Length: 234
Image (cartoon, rainbow, N blue to C red; front, top):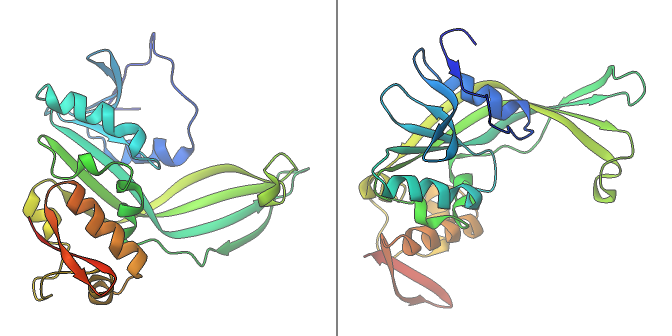
């Protein structure tokens, strides 16, 4: 790729969907290095500024230990997680591999979907030298019903997930940036019901936000409101 150095010699690159590769190219600038070794680990993108960028399309818990270990050594680490705000579903004929149907997925992710992943990696929240960046993206998912997929998916196999565009970026590093997710005019203490109503999301997801911020030490339990836990600033 012109302008970038991809250091692949001697490194076993794992198989990945095109979405991961597309995001790395989107984030990279001339002078940055792709798939570069740092402290015996392979980093998705090492910026010319020295910042280490890891793109994790799912399961943030798997990258947390690596990110925190590098951050503890003084590196500036950015963990980028894409959230599919818009998804185009494309189906291929299993024999000819021609596109036989295309439709928009009814599922639409939002910024707060980040916490579906952070419940498994709350240590990333407001950690020293760590920035978490949520990217709302438009993607294309290609499937084929060739019988090799799981029975739950009726034999469908995902061929690829591609990046079609980036709609919005939101970065979180400081405690105040994370706490800004809670509306300033929402009276404390907060419950999953009150936060969910204020943000226009389901209480289940609001509960994850409160849980993660509490695990990170930004909030503390403040009794109960009925049967629900209440939280306030730590």
